[in-house]
Image: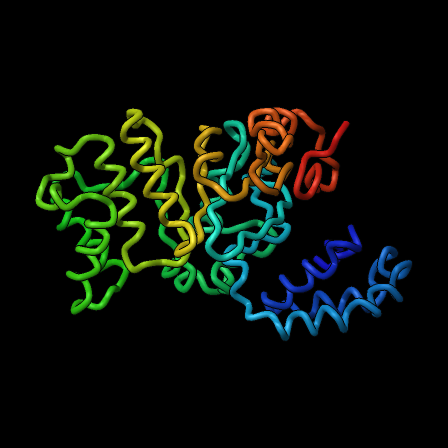
Length: 317
């Protein structure tokens, strides 16, 4: 996997830090050991740069990036659903995750949450490797899938009590924690109602409440406003916006205005490859609309190596 670091000299520090945090130090040793022609050509540059990388790593607290994905690939037989994508999400940021249907968004989110393993690459959440420490990762993630798995015959409070037990929240803390998420998600009046009798909007609130149980630092939300009416959409968006800062949020959606209103940054993937990773465009600043950015990103060609069209922006034609 050392060949990753040979692609672009400007990405060397970033990738080394990610690999060091993953305790994959032998990859860096491989870089210095002249194991490929790009390394032989630029070996003096790498050797000169490595001491600064190690210094940066020692000074780094390790908690700036809550989600780290490095050259992650997911295959289903001959099909590459996700193809060598790399991105990081800093602590406390709400990041929109965009792409056409079939782009690989849900697959990426399943890999990050540990529901399915990656075929290649490194995925870390809150400084834990998803492959080697899956339970530690799950303890630090609140996951709201597109289709919320609810037990419709249970009451709201009963269901949240069940989830609190599954999450191994201590018994003496469960009642207080359930009350906290019920109040946070506006479910106080519905706490004793049967879930099967709730509206779609309130069911989404219950799904968000179960994701918040245990106060995980990372939230992964897969299309949380799908199927809601305009009032419910506004309420759920306000809740998600309020979670920023306290939680790191990865928000998958097809609604572009939702990203503009809620998110701090945006990641766009197309055909399983990363095509944009940067700030949400601001029309007033002259950077154009998110819709323009999205259409240009998914229309642009992606290099054979699976690199983004442009880091922090879409490459001009």
